[in-house]
Length: 402
Image 1 (tube, helix red, strand yellow):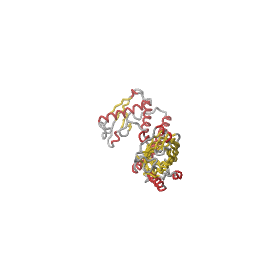
Image 2 (cartoon, one colour; image 1 turned 30 degrees about the vertical axis):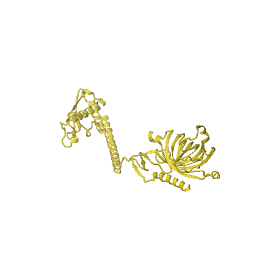
Image 3 (tube, one colour; image 1 turned 90 degrees about the horizontal axis):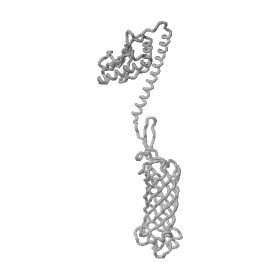
Image 4 (cartoon, helix red, strand yellow; image 1 turned 90 degrees about the vertical axis):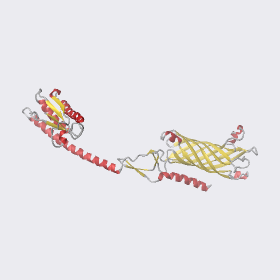
């Protein structure tokens, strides 16, 4: 019996050690996270996590030859014995686990030979494969309150091993028994469950005393017990974090962030320079004694845009703000033409025409927001058929004000 106990404990330890194999590295943008192997999307916890210790007690019964009751129904109450059990379970996954259970008790049977009640002490040590059907069929949920856990297993069954049984002439009967059943778990707190276990097991009938042996091949035993389970250490499960980025992806991302930070610093410096220039220009205008001259009446002003864009930059808005001041101080009957263009190297003619019109309208809208009257502005878009400037194609992504 000691050898079998050590064998069952060793089997449970070996199965549980599955969670301690080589670690995999899961990398994200922000950090590198070390995770254990995963099974169907869940990360396996450590060896000492997801253990359960259970104890319970209830009724038991043994039947020979016939699967249930050979005797008349009125003997049912006289044939009920008792059982107490202790279990240690390791869950390897939200669905799969392994258990070692030691159950002991006493059967009560009516002897066919003596017509007396025969009490048979027993001890059953077995290891089981546990399947959490609720998590399997309904998906893993940490807040579930009921779990249906069917199980199958095998182990060592000993009967009539007490001194009293030997005094009555019954030898110790040792058999290999196979078991199966349903464990109903009701979660009452983060660490405690209430259990109701329905279990049956089968073993050879030939080893039973002659007073019970009916000449059949198998004997059957049944038990119904209730008890408590305490779950300790890590109790829940984490879903696997997929490896979404490689080392090259992370390096490229870091380089892009550094480049953007440099660009932002340069833009802030330019913004400060433009702000200083604007302050100086405003001061000059305030101190001027004569009416300001329109710097563009006999010429033109150009506003440049980025590729495929009709959005005004901060620099453009500063320049257009100064132009709006000039227009507002000029004669009210004077009109100005706003002409939009697009470079001919990119986009179709239809697209470039629409883009040039959007650019011209963006300039007109901004000037109107600064007080310029809409009837002073003539807005046109020329697309890429007209290229106002030669040389660099970027010079033709422009709106010209005349």
